[in-house]
Amino acid sequence: MTPETKQRIDDLVTQNKIMIFMKGNKLMPQCGFSNNVVQIMNALGVPFETLDVLADSDIRQGIKEYSNWPTIPQVYVNGQFVGGSDILIELYQSGELQQMVEVALAS
Image (cartoon, rainbow, N blue to C red; front, side):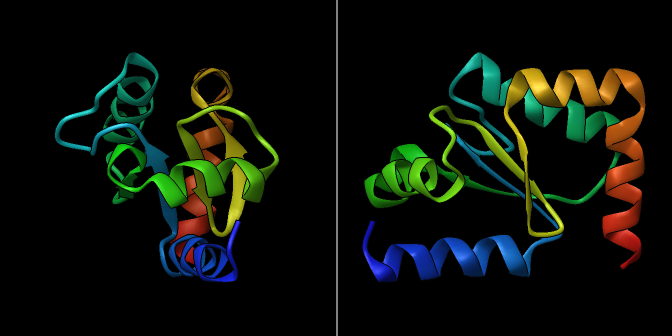
């Protein structure tokens, strides 16, 4: 990953309380896992930003190195990597995600 790509990812993760790197965007997810994440965030009714990795090959590869996580989507809350679709589903069902998001948005 180039220093420029790392800086772009750093900026996106730190400037947005909830940042999702996904295939497609929040209005038109391009895979089922990305759609799951968008549906969870919509159910929580919280603001979030997305970046379409299909439109940016540097970010698509770079985000995997950045998080040391091999799959997309990747969700960051308050600058911290939370996980992908399966982890978000578990956190949502347990109520932990709601708490995590409320803390992030209040800070």
